[in-house]
Image (cartoon, rainbow, N blue to C red):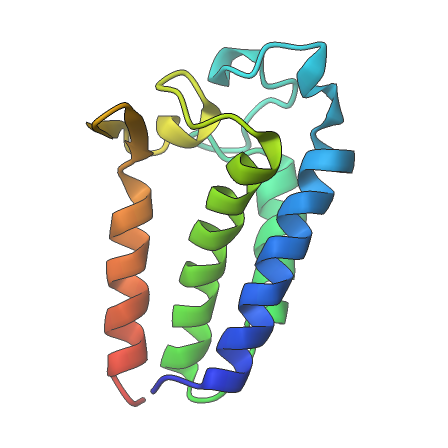
Amino acid sequence: MFDPGSFLRVAVFGVLYAGIEYRYVNRYERESPTTAEGVSEKPVFWVITPYHLFLLLPLFVTVSFTLPITAWAGNTFFLAVLEDIVYFVWRGKSVTAEDWTTTLFGSFRVGRFVIPLWWPLDILVAAALFWVPL
C-alpha cells in the first residue's frame, strides 16, 4: 500500500543523496574514466561493488522504511531509480551506453537519450509493490 509521507521522504532523500554522491563520493569522475571499466572498485559479485553492497543498499533500505513491507520494498526500488536519475541531472550529462548504470541489464534509446533497462523495470516493480497491500 502506498504511503505518501514515506514516499515524499524517500524522494527528498534521493535528490539530496544524488547531489552528495556526485559532489563527494564520485568526485574522481572528472579525472577518471566514467565507463564501467573505469570503476576503481572491484565488484563483490556481478557488477555490484562494496560501495553498493555495504553502504548504498543498507542506507536505502533504512531510509525507505514504512509499513506495510511491500510499501517499504516499493520505496527502496523507487529510491534506487530516483537517485540514479537525479545523479545524472546533477552531473549535467545524460546517460551514455558506456556508463556503469547501463552494465546492470543494458540500455535502450529513446530519441537521443540512453535509458538503462533497469530504470523502467524498477519503476514497474515499485508500482506493483505499492499496489499490493501486504
